[in-house]
Structure formats: C-alpha cells, structure tokens
Image (cartoon, rainbow, N blue to C red):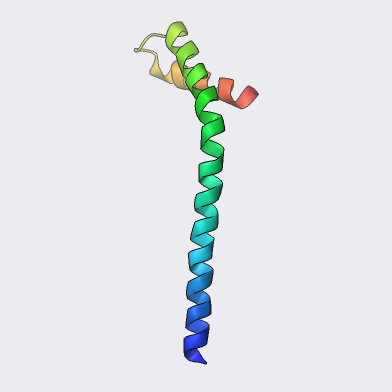
Length: 65
C-alpha cells in the first residue's frame, strides 16, 4: 500500500512539471516577435543612457496589443 501511494505521488509530481513546462513554451513564440518589434522601436526612440525609459516603453508596447 505504501509503495502504491508513493508511485501515485511521484506520477502526479512528474505530470505537474510537464504541464507547467508546456504552458511556458506555448506563450513564448507569440510574445517574442511582438517584443522584438517593441524593442526595436524603443531603441530608435531612447538612447542607451535611458535604459529605464526604454524598458518602460517596451512593457507598455507589449501590454497594449
């Protein structure tokens, strides 16, 4: 009985890691192209000295669409 419970718990833990890994990988391709576009626009607008303004611009740009 004890080995059965241990095996079931191990299977549940393994499944939970697999589900979270799948959820994380599905979102990245969509965000990467949008984020790359926003980063390019921010690079044109703000110099390297204004890195905080650049980061805020990217966050707002990605969040709007």
